[in-house]
Length: 91
Image (cartoon, rainbow, N blue to C red; front, side, top):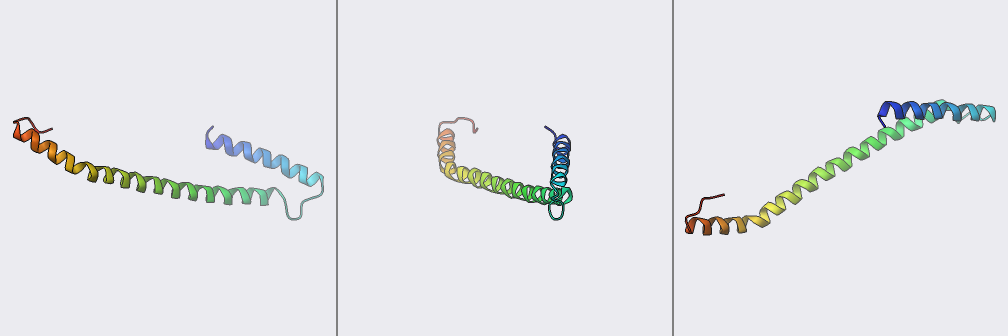
């Protein structure tokens, strides 16, 4: 589901909630506008959390790749030395 369709569905649902709140006489502090403001604030917070998690994933992926390279470096050097001793081509 794309963002536009999801947003439209959420706003339609909020309109219904706002109408129901008005029919019950609850309009002073909880209304459509405060609900929309709350949703937009939470959307921004969610996007920030998602960006933070993406940054952590990138960091730990880089850390894992560099650790693997460091761990395999001696083995590659030995393999290259053996290959050179026996006259094979370097990979």
